[in-house]
Image (cartoon, rainbow, N blue to C red; front, top):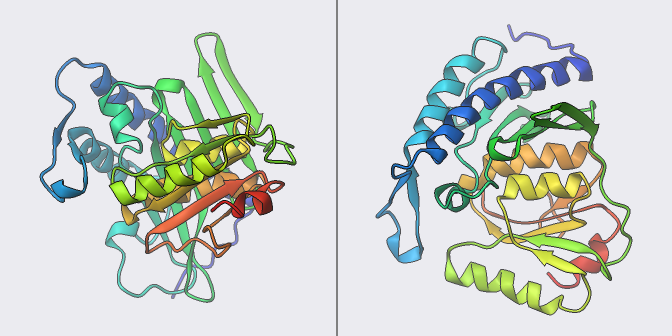
Length: 286
């Protein structure tokens, strides 16, 4: 007999906070490895003709640590990557992400994250993320959101911790806006991103390219950017997309595929997120 879950949004928020604590621990180990002068990664020979790929030792450490610890604090039905072919309504699966922003991590930049998302299958047997946590260890930033409980940004510094409600910008036009875009290592996909960025020239005040997707989405949610777009995010990006998506949703921003359709959680996606005020203008360029 399946357990009935009668939780409040605050229950989900409390669960998100607990898992965020675990992600912070995992992130500290990853940050230590990044600052260590030894080699961080070995180039992978898989799909070498499609661009550079990396295998990180720390990814395995993160997965082992999170898989073991998360089972101690929350009832759930399994992990996203090992779920059965068929799932029933109400079942929940944690998706623990590997390092999001691998090139940034390997090049010792600060913009990379560790992520976690909790998926729940709805009455239509379709999955939807209901908790999202994005932790950027080198920046001291954590974004977390839970269904119905809003989104919060936690900034830890040497002088203490600051918590803010996550709210998108009020920019109402592409003119003077600040956008961000993502770009693949696959030539045809990166060209598509550059073509859109070029077509926008003269309208936004600035177009940023920093990454990774999870952090870009959170920066749309908190008003750092007015919108973000990327032409092709792959199935291996789903953990980061899902975690950032809940933050955007709970901040009352918008997120969809370029054609306005919903994100497919089992397939590749083109993604656009915005403050909700400039999406119609932006979609003309996508």
